[in-house]
Image 1: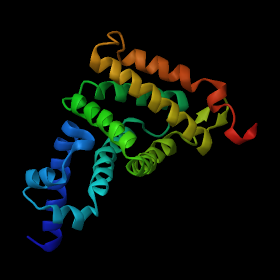
Image 2 (image 1 turned 90 degrees about the vertical axis):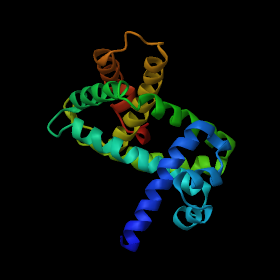
Image 3 (image 1 turned 120 degrees about the vertical axis):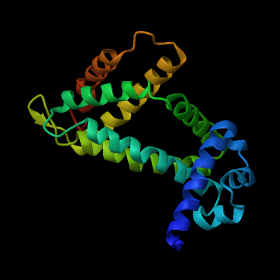
Image 4 (image 1 turned 90 degrees about the horizontal axis):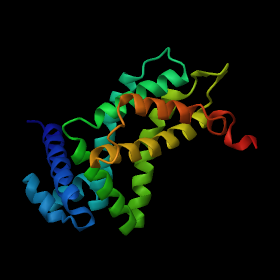
Length: 207
């Protein structure tokens, strides 16, 4: 095994261990336990990620990257804005039934708790999440809607609103609080939101 391969193997082992420990313990997660679970030392964490916070931020990026890649595949080119939003909504709803859905939600809630306890980590997590969400905003930008083309700024505002909508609905589905929230419900609510003129009818700086 080459040096690069060993480095990547250790990086993956630490990320997998961090997912398990952080999901369970949140901000109380101990670096030595994460390293032990990965079969490595805490020195490996500092070497590869710089700090515990660096490991957590890398964990978020590692978790989100394939998610947004799947979204890009689920929302093809050639659709207008409402069709694209519909496809995204249905994909998001299907993800609520995936085998790892509960673990993913546990991690989301845990990371929020960690961010509240550590403002510096919170700022780093915001940067990591926004960098990934930019890919989703780019997926909506340039699509036609009511005779015009969605701008980058409008797409960013829409992305922010859709994230809030779907996170709330997904929690309801997982906790049993939204028994009627099937794919059609997700699609209908997302379309209604995207149709709002206050959201995408003008740029934020046009007022």
